[in-house]
Length: 129
Image (cartoon, rainbow, N blue to C red):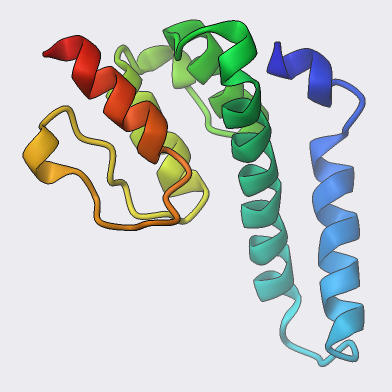
């Protein structure tokens, strides 16, 4: 699924090039290298998350296997040690520097209108109830 989409993308190379263009855009101001790298890592994670969510309708539903694959592509270590959709989504959200807002309790849904996971969160909650 998602793996085939990004097999041709070298994570390190993508992040390196993105960080370079971020540095170039601000005139290569010294001392911002780490900020550029970290922002590029978040952009990479956001790109993969958006691709994952976009292809979910074709693949069906969120699965542990697909979330583990996404987590590994983003660079989350030991994603095989996470055993629930919620744990994996929280780890993915944390890696993307997003507020971990995915909850099985409908009273705790996030109020963020731009949350990438909102629709999938609501689907899983509906299935659990």
